[in-house]
Image (cartoon, rainbow, N blue to C red):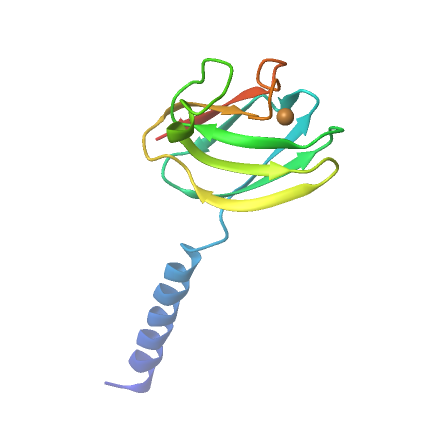
Length: 132
Ligand SMILES: [Cu+2]
């Protein structure tokens, strides 16, 4: 084998390696703003079973949380709903929280609520649209 072929093979190996690394890029990022009393936007569409980065900005005057449910809540939120919580993040007034989580594997509409007493009833509800 002459030098040209060795160089070509090495270049090809490098391209394959770099392409493979490109697949593990930083997760897609999404953002929701929490206000008194609601989520903006009211709906987010995300891919199923993927690791995503979520940023929550609390522009309200009180503590809120972003709670993703596997089953829609019949208010008030209570112990009956606790087993259906997929993930819950609390954000103090004026603060921002960023976290990474894996979206549900099963496509569909998932309810997002704030579980602070009375907040769901006041309108703190949104939808996470999980698509295949
Ligand atoms: Cu709230």
